[in-house]
Image 1 (cartoon, helix red, strand yellow):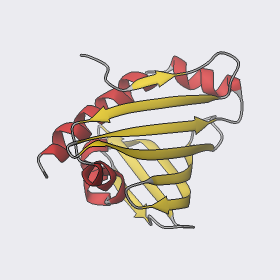
Image 2 (spheres, rainbow, N blue to C red):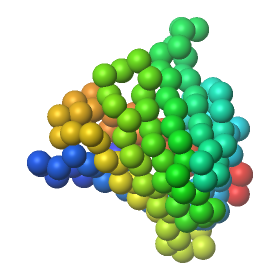
Image 3 (cartoon, helix red, strand yellow):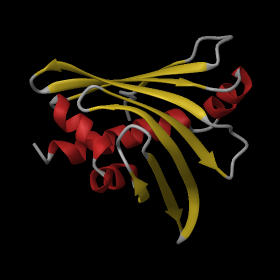
Image 4 (cartoon, helix red, strand yellow):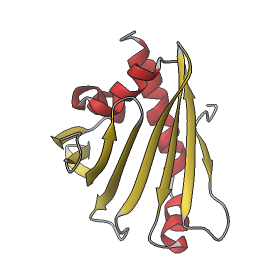
Length: 154
């Protein structure tokens, strides 16, 4: 499977940059991050809380064999429709501390758009630990599902 989601992690830095171009109009790409029902489908998760607004918060959990396999939560610091989301992201029950995420949405053409994610970790060590996990494959698969599922809404 081709990895369309690109991850750049510069040595000696505590951040990663993730980019992905989608064959989706900008408003549909943003909608995949804005609407809980759509997010649940492409992420394969259950949304527990979804307040996409300044000072709002979110929480979701993913199941494997009827057991919670992953839980995450965070606070929304900035939410500008069709443009950007700035949020914290915490993976519950893991050694990872809260990370800061900047999601920027960009129009390429009327039928294509780009997501740029800038994620800042507490340390280089935590960033590198995440990168040793199947993180890249997981986010690429999730973005592939986003592309497939949301294109049907067009």
